[in-house]
Length: 201
Length: 201
DNA sequence: GTCTATATGCTGATAGAC
DNA sequence: GTCTATCAGCATATAGAC
Image (cartoon, rainbow over all chains, first blue to last red; front, side):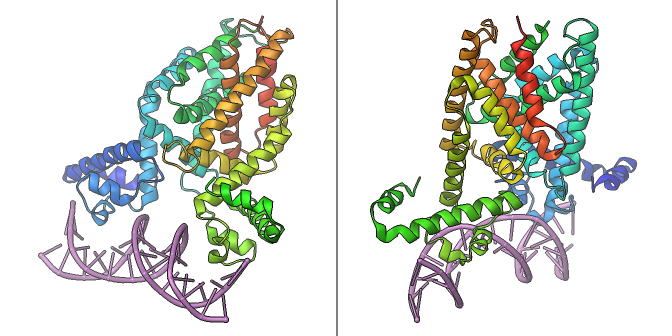
């Protein structure tokens, strides 16, 4: 976010191609290290080493540690959004599919879980990111729920907003339990919830 | 936990009464400070100042910062367990009541949320605490769900373990959303979920 | 039991050479 | 663009005086 204008400059000139590539490389390395060690235990130095740079060298590309992590988050979100079907009708299945995939990337699940709780402080660098993210997700899932109601798959007596909020909450909470108990089948539980709700007359 | 034998000695002799009282005072102060600043931003020094001790003075009572926080957690859990009805049949309403109460103690909600994600690393001081806690909660809530099924309030076609897991997950996830969006009525949403599940034929 | 003083180690960030 | 060197700050933990 603080890097927005930097990104814009990047796209424009070929001379910066290497810089762009290096930035991408750093972000990839950051994802890898975080995935292994978790967010709390990852320092700028750790990421720098993983990418073969000194700490100062890495900070040439990102203004601060927070800017780097915000960018990691933003990129990760992009990837997830690509996974989410454009068709509202398919988004519950899409959410379940994402949960299935998340079981393969524990470090990222942890990054989200830790950052989203930390970010509750309004001054936190990622606070706006997360409030906006949840607002968008609730709205999109709300549409999906309404679509299901219109198709007659879900009772119209259920409040769509409430169901969307609960689906999101369940997804997050299942991840918390799964991190402690990796045997838990998150996707299956979420699917079970949706199936149960669809049976409400 | 590292303080287990210390506690045992404490109970035995009147001479240690002051020490016990001070320990309690420290734990109370810790809860207050954490409730205000969140877990991450709370140092041993902060708690020491709140209780009128130096940092070294406080660490006379607790072997380490981790031991202190583990004890804070353990105590908090005790309080919550007292809130939870002994009668399995009333425990869903009990969970909803706890959610209602949690809206008044944001710092503690955050302590739990942050620690429970951090603790997913098996080496973490609170790892065993949380895995065990979730196991117990799932089992107890599972009993409750089965009790509801036996009373005919909930369809027996639903898997009790799965419903218990989802209820817990929803509670946790609602807290995540509420920390970012304090307007969210966690208790109402959870109640809505339970009501919906009870309508499944 | 409580203090001051300090050891030690991390962190993120910056200055300036090349 | 990348480095080395270094800074200031904060943390936990400990030694030892009182």
